[in-house]
Image (cartoon, rainbow, N blue to C red; front, side, top):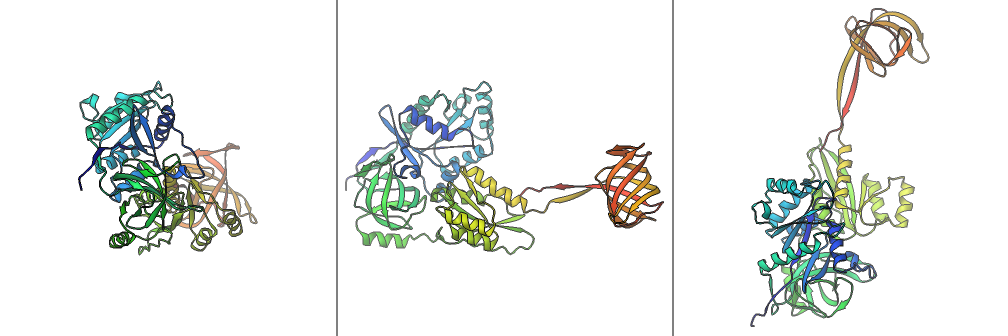
Length: 502
């Protein structure tokens, strides 16, 4: 068959550090080009991509939760994006997730464009940020490199059209093309189970034309295309390369990052899918991981997310958390709202429930109250989700206790002993360091420890004070099981807890 090669639009992923304006920039592009994210019966909020027209040319943007999802797709071997836009706050500069995003883009081997955002702010320092980027291996054109950069303000719209122009230029240089004579092939960029419509998948094609009625398959699922919808929820008859399209008709939810292909027959599709069947554990099944170490603490968690794309991104991000001190055990992970079965498992395994853009079902809420469990933590941003899990893990680490010696007091007189309350009032002289109210103490008699206590109150010259230093006499009210006598030494100290990091 003779090849039919056409130019195809670029597929762009927007990556960068949390709060540097990725989502705001995407919204600014929509607004600038009069594109709206229509919520059509719960369809388009999960599509994960949208298409814009700029100066007669189309551009597809992957609307992922950030570089985590992009990285997750890349780890599955999916080269879904052609160009990456790295968003960096021109005020804050390069941050930890900026570095991670740079690494992901370099590993993907695709061109990068730097968008220096928040340029409208008086404290913006784009030239300084460019130097920071250079130190991290990203040398922009104005600094003698080959990577284009554009100053933008997602808030005011400044530089947005210029950024789109840069994307168009880079796209032309990449000479992106597609063979229309080949069977339709592409990548699953989003998928979830709709209670009314069944398995739903968002696809971006690389070659061919996908039509209603065709047999399609991935390494984990097959189906017959019942319906195709564009990114705004409109029913379409066929989809073309680089166009984000919602596909209905899969027999089960396919995995993110898998290749999708159109087949000539169901038998051929079954044969190919069987040959390439994904061996991974299904997300609907519990994921139990054992830990043979007796030294590490174990934190059990249950994860529920809105879509599989979020789940893959979160699980990959959690894998990056150090586990030398605390082991993270994912008892169950899945897509959908938090249900009573999740609560029962959490109760039985003493696990924490974490949700991402999901709700807690009414029956699950009732069970949580009955079981007297803590409310599940629900997050809207992947970075916050991962930080929430990290905090729970750090709380499981036994804090390091440090003892700080303060001073010593020699008992000169016993004024009162309250037997019932185990409190004693004494007079003494500070012979070393200082003594402080609230400090702990050890009682020494002939250099042997005979008991412990706590300083409740201090007086110097009949006035209440917080501390008394060496060489001064003082009155002390302290609590102890041990009855002291003249000549005993009170060794005063305090302890500090140091919370260790993972």
